[in-house]
Image (cartoon, rainbow over all chains, first blue to last red; front, side, top):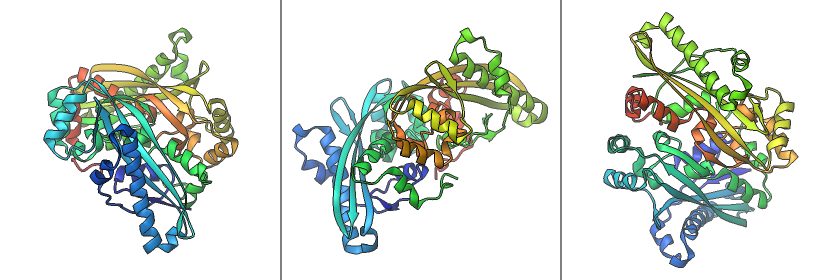
Length: 218
Length: 218
C-alpha cells in the first residue's frame, strides 16, 4: 500500500517516516488564498484548514490519475493544512522576521489553538474510491519569553516559514511550555486522526508499515 | 558552552539536536534499581524519577572531573529519567513482548501520567558549581486499539525498550490520541523545563545553540 503525502513540508514527511511509513511526496502547489476565499466566513476556522487539506489531496490525486497510473492503481493520498488560531484570527507562516517577532509578542505567555485539517483519499484502479476528512485542535501554551529570547529565536530563521511562527520539533520546542492535544498534529500531520480516517477507508495502520522495514527509524 | 547528555537514549539526543544543540553523550550506567530503592516510598513517584536523573548527572560529572578536564572546565550536564505512572504503579521499559502487550492491554482507551525527572549541573573549572532539578508530569491519552493492532505494534519491537511501552516520536504516535503537557518530556527530555533550569544556572538557551550551526536540522 503506497502512501502519497501531498505536502512539501519536511516536518510532515519526517513524522511519517519516524512512524514507520515511507511516503511518496507529491507537492500540490494549490493557491491557498484562493481556496480559503471559497470558504464562507460563518463556516469557521476548521472549515478553512479542512478545505485546504482537501484541495491539496484532490490536486495530487488528479495528477496521479493522469500521470502516474501505477501509483493511482493502489494508494492513499494524504493532504494536510495547519494554521494557528488566536484572538479570532487564523495565522499561517509569517515569512518575515518582523512578522515572526510580532507574532511571538502576541502569544508569549498565552495559549493559542493549532488547527490541522486532514484529507485522506483512497485510490484504486486509477481513481478515488473513498474520501475522509477531519480537523483537529491542539492547545499550545507559549512560554513567556523575554524580548532578547524572541530575537535570538527569530534570528535562527526557523520560525519564518512555519505556521504560527513556531515549531514543536525544532528550536521552538524550548519555548513551548506544553500542549493539549495531538503533538503530531502540531507538527503538521496528526497521526491519530489519520489512523482513524484510513481505518474508515479499510486500511489499518499496519498495512501502511508494509512499505518500510522495521529499521526505518535508524 | 558544551552540553553533556548523560543518557544513551537516541530519542533524547535527537530532541536536543533538533532543538539546535549538539550534545556530547556520556552514558552513566547507574544501577537504577539501587537508586530507586533509596527513595522513601512516601516521597512519591516524582522523587524517584528526580533521584534517578540526579544520580545519572552526578556520575557523569564525577567522571568528567576525573577523565575529561577540558569538558569539565565549562559545560552543563543533563541527566533525565522517564517512567509511566498508572494506577499507582511506576512502569519503566517492558523488555519483553509479553510485558509490552500486557502494558497496552492495561492502558488502551485510558490515560496515564508520564513522569520525567531532570537534573542540570553547571560545571566550571573542573567541578560542579551549580545544580538544579525538576520533574514534569504529562498526561498521555492512549487510543483504544484492538488486540490485532496491539500485536502488530509489539511485533515491530519498538515498544520493548521504551518507558511505558510506547513512543510519541515513532510508530507509537499512531496510537496516542493526545497529550497534556510537554511533548519533549514524553520523548524523554523536557525542553521547557531544561530551559528554566539552565536559565537559573545563568545559561540562556541561545548560549546552548552556539555549538551548533543554524543548519543542524538539515
